Length: 197
Image 1 (cartoon, helix red, strand yellow):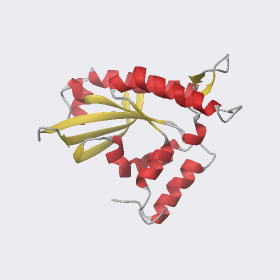
Image 2 (cartoon, rainbow, N blue to C red):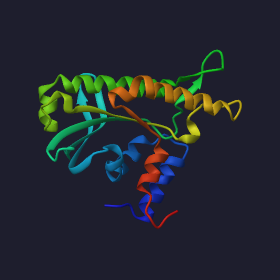
Image 3 (cartoon, one colour):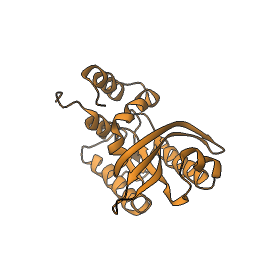
Image 4 (cartoon, one colour):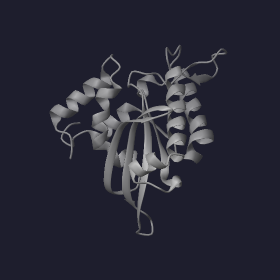
């Protein structure tokens, strides 16, 4: 079901506003499941604040997906959410490279711990309907926006340092594990009603 103009405006206000509102943004992800799971979806079930020894996972989307061979497979994707107002990177000491902000590192750490806990937990896998450990997967991190990739850039070209830092992390760390990093404005664009430009 697509967002109507009023729902989209409310979501956009949360993303563009100054207050940290990731919990209020989370319900809108229901309309972005095809962005979050890049497979043919047959059905989905969302789990919110999934409690474990490691903490509470923000969002788990369990889905029946159609495989490339036409079989149906049940998978669960873990997503960690940080506010659209969070920055992803800040300057490192030498100002010629960027490092992840504490918000970004926290999201990464939470995602890895929640995922690891679920892979090892029969009760968690039963709850999601996913008994095959390989089908408990990282979805990724939804954080910040394009405008917040670097905290307090001194020069416009410094944004490229932050983009390069994100690309390095993606290429060297995340890609092989299937971890994605999305900005909230990417989600906003995905759910934008077709009659709103």
